[in-house]
Image 1 (cartoon, rainbow, N blue to C red):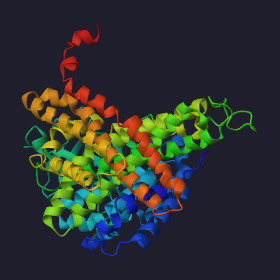
Image 2: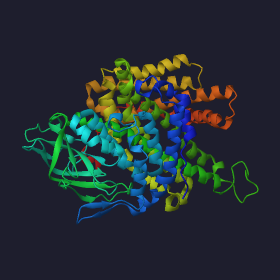
Image 3: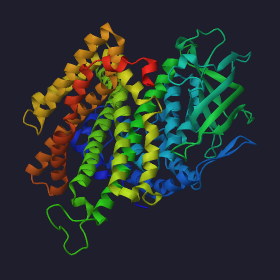
Image 4: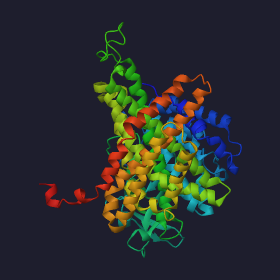
Length: 592
């Protein structure tokens, strides 16, 4: 089985050289002392953890899966998961970017995203247990009472306990107005929570002693819509150590992420406590969801990186046929398959997408830190606008490409990729769920078009376009600046089309949503690649000894612009084609 190696040089290139992240972070009062020495040391240690602790139990988790005991409603995680989780928690990794007043380390969110990338590359299933806990932490920080925060946050942040997000029910997923779980007020101020939730990540497991469920439910007199949803905290064990009747009713039998316990949860008048205001659970939920959606984007990136490493190593070693232009390795029986143009196409597509997606993700994470920590309200607002705007793009595009890259990697390996020996087939299976959970990618596209384009009356979109235009004005001579400008023009044309057509007919905007999100993402990656190429050109001009590293950046940018960015032209055509060909079919005609 090939070994994962954290791509620290590429990560630092984006963080240090392209985004100049340390300079931005040091403008924030809480991060004044955060510099390269600390950040670099943390990334080095995270790499060791991912490579030496998490990755070795990844295949075991896939082959063993989680085991459910119906007699006591318990779940046993795969061999080695409990010990690996304890090393993760005991090392302080669960607390990295959490508030210091509750035991967190208060480090930057973007640093935590970088650690999440390595975690997801090494072992997505195991990384989901602490990952989903962060959603619960963020909801309690934003909406919990002081008593709830003091009671639960220190143990969630330390990793002593884990948390869940209990949203989906058998009859409803995205349409949460249809939930049937009920919360009945009790005399002591608690609520009796009754109902069934499905697809609950980490709903039951043996990694920790207590699990804190955040559960969406409706009060008896609540409106029968999303305006009637409330959020409740339901612990597995109560203060007196008695078992709360919130039981796992079984595990889902899944295509992938088999080491992650995906549970059916039955709440049988379980005791819970209201988080936030009654009937305001939707706002609390989005605090969890936005955090989780960025995390899922990093899952896509992490899987893509792991698959890329395997396929590149294989292509360098596998001997098969000769180059179309004659032998490249005449001393061997055949040439390594990396000499073949189609193999290179698969490899370079992965490389260009992964490195571009990494830059976009870190750019978003850096703005999340500014949104939380800058002294100026106006700066915080603008940064938060950008995070809100880019969250559905990061979630959807990075997971689409994570799955696509894993598929490309499997294709490079051919029949070997279809076996368990190389680990690629697991990555393909694991990657597929990332395009579905935390809101399918179609929902992300609808969120972008239906909500985020209009955020602040279009304020967020104008600011983002303005950033790109300002950079182009200041760097007109940057590599591929003209290609970025043309892509931005296409994106602006598509935005105008959606604004005018969607105002008249909501189906027009919905029909355009998915290609629009992809056009938005490709344009953003073009900007990132022009920035990366500009840095690489400058470093080479200044005599850097890393000629292969920076030269590869320039050539990868060339590949992206020549072979991947042209898709933006067809996406604009697809958007402007409108809904007619989609909506013309009757139900009977679909089956004809």
